[in-house]
Length: 220
Length: 220
Image (cartoon, rainbow over all chains, first blue to last red; front, side):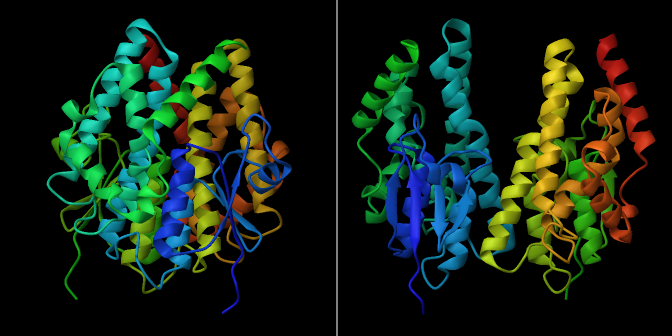
C-alpha cells in the first residue's frame, strides 16, 4: 500500500473543519493540519477551492475535496476498512444525509442571522435557532447516537457545534441545557470519545474569539 | 424478490421532481406518480415531509425520502444492479456531489432572485445566473457528459433545468446558446436519452406556467 499524503486546510474554531478532523481521527488517518488566516487566504487555498475559496479543503495525494459533508463521506469511502461513519443500509444513509443537510441549511445561517441583528430580527432568529435544536433533539429521540448505538454521520455533523453552544447562549440569552437537555446529554456522550474530545476546543475560547471577531468587524 | 411499492410525490415542472423521475427511469423502476397541488398540499405530503413540506418525496414501501439529490443517491444505492448513476471511485463521487450541491446552492436561488427583482438587482442576478452557467460549462469542458462518457449524477442534477432555459432567457433577456454553446450541445446529447426526453416537458409550456404563476402572485 502506498503512503497517502493527506492535508487539511482549516481555520481555528470552524465547525466544518472539525467535522473533517473527527472523521480522520475516527479512521486513524495521519494528516497535516494547515491553519488558514481567513482574512489573508493562502494561494494554496485559492487554488484548491477556486469556487468558494473556503475551508475546509481536504487534499488527498494532491487532489482537493471541498464541502465538509462531502469530505466526511469521501473519508468514509476511501478508508472503508474500519469504523464506518455512514450507515450501511440505503434508507438509513438517506436519513443521515437528510439530517446533515438540515444542519447545514439551518444552524449556521440562523446563528449568523441572530448574531448580526438586533431587536425583533434578533428575537425571531433566536426563537428559530432554539426551534432548530428542539427539532434535532426530537430527531435524536431516546437513541444513544443519531444512527442508534454507534457514533456516525449525523453525530459528526452536529457535535462540532457543541463548543459554540456557549456562544449561542450568551449572544441569545438562553440556556441550551434548559431548552434541550437530551441534546446536551447526547453531546456529553459524544465528548467521551477521544476522537471528538481531542478536536473540540474549549467553549470559552470559541466565545472569546467570536467577541474579538465582532469587535474587528464593527471597527471596519 | 418482493414487489416494491414506489410512489413519487411531485409537482408539474419541478426540476427537482424530474431528477427523481429520470433516476427511476434510468433504473427501470415502476412507480406511481402523484401530482401535488402546491397551493393546497395533500395530508400525505405534510405527513411524509413534515420538515420542509416540499416535493419531491419518494415513498419506498411506505418510507419517505426527501431532498432530490438525496433521493437520486438512494435510488442509485437501492437499485444498484444496473446503470450506475454515481461514479464508482470515491474521488469522482465527491466531485459529482460537489457539483450537484453547487447547482442546488446557485441555480434556483439566483433565478428566483432575478425573477422577483427589477432594475439593478435584476441585472445583478441575471449576470450572476449567466456566470453560474458559464462555470458549469467550464466544468463540463470537452467531456460528453459530466462524469465522462456515461450519463451520471451531475447530468441528472442539471438536465432538469434545461426546459427552464427558455424561461430564464425570456425573463433575463439573454440567449443561452450564445452564452454557453457547449452547455446547450451537452443538453441536446442528454435529450437523446429516452429516460430524459420522456420526462422533460416542453420549454414553452414551462414558460406559460411561470407567466401564470407570476400573474397569480401579483394579484394577491
